[in-house]
Length: 462
Image 1: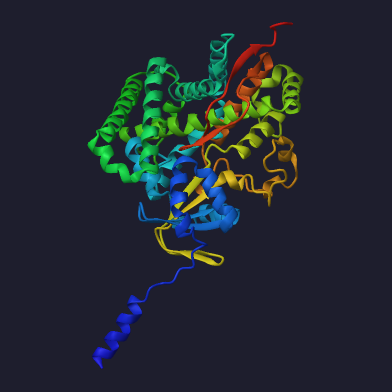
Image 2 (image 1 turned 60 degrees about the horizontal axis):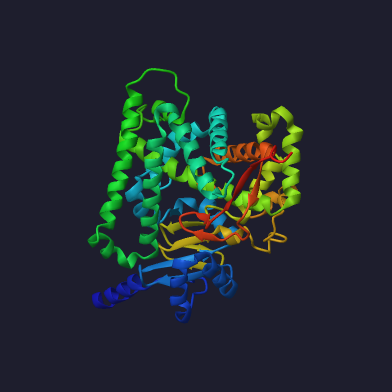
C-alpha cells in the first residue's frame, strides 16, 4: 500500500509542466539567426516576424537560454505594465552592464530599484528640469558656434558631444571641466564596446579574461568612479547656492529613513544618468536632422514656426504641446527609436492568450518593428510628423521612452534639449548634408553609422 501511494505521488510530483511556446525558429534557421543577431539584429528579428508571426521563440544553446521575441503591443503592455511585478530586466543589463556601471536606475531591479526610483524621480519633475533651460541654451549655442568651420563635419559626433556636455553641465554645473568631461566620455565609449562584445559573443568570455580585456575595462570604470567621487567630495565641502542635479541628489532623502544616498550609490546613479541621458538624445537628434534635411516641406514648416514665434521661440511656454518641432521629433523617434529593443525576464511561469512560458524565459520586444508595423501605422516607413496631430494617435503602439513602471524619467529633459537644439539651429543656420542614405547600427542603442555635412549661416550669400 505504501509503495503504491509513494509511486503515485512521486509520478504526480515529477510530472513536467507542458508550456505552449510561440512558434520556434527552426533548427535549420537557428545558426543563421544567431549569426545575424551579431551583425544585423533588427533585420533578422524582423525577418523571423514575417515568417513566424508577431511573437516567436528562439532557443539559444550558446547561452542556454530561451528567448521570446515579440512586436505585439498587447503583450508588451501586459509584460511591462499589467503584470510587471512578474518581470524584471534580464542579466544582460543587471549583471553584464551593471558590473561596469553599478546599480543605478537602468541596471537595478526589485525593491532596491523601486527605492531608488522614488528617491530620484522628483528631481526630474517638469519644474526642476525647466530650471535647467538656460544651461541647455548656453551649451547648444557654444556647440553650434564651435562647429562653424566652413567644412564638412561629423554631425553625429557633434550631437553626441553636445548632449554629453548638456548632461555634464546640468548635473554638475561649473564643478566639472571639459577635460573631465572628455575623459568620462571616452571611458563610457570604451565600456559600451566591451559590453556589446560580451552580449553578442558570450562564448568568448574566457578569452576576454585571459587577454586582459575584461580587467582593462573594469579599470576604466573605476577611474570614472574616481572622477565622480572627487567632484562630489569637493561639492560636499563647499557652501553656496547651486542649481544643478547633483545638488538636488545630495539633498534628497529616503522616505523611510530620512537618510541621504550613500556615496557609491550616488556615483552609480550619476553614471547611469550620463550613459542613459546623452547617447539616446544624441542619436535621436542625428536621425532628426537627416529626416528634416530630406523633407523640404517639413523643413519649411519648422522654420516658419520658429520665425512666427518671434522672441518666444525658446520660451518654456512654447516648447511643449503640439508644436511642429515636437511632432517632427516624435515622428523621428517613431522611425528610429534609440531604445530599439527592450527585454524582461519572467520571475515565474506565465501565460498570455494562447501562449505560455517557463520561469526564466527572456522576452524581447522590438520597438523598431512595433513603430513600423503596417497594421497600426499608415505608410509606416514614411516621415509624416502630422500623424501626431491625429485624434487616434494615443491608440497607436508608440513607446520611445518605454512603458509601465520603468518609463524613462528623462523624457521631459530629452524633449526640452532636442526642441531647443532644433530651434536654435534652424533660426540662424541651415545644413548642407552630404550623407544621402541613413545606415544604422543596433548596439545598446540604435545609432547612425554616419551623418556628415556642413553648418552654414543663413546670412552667408544674402
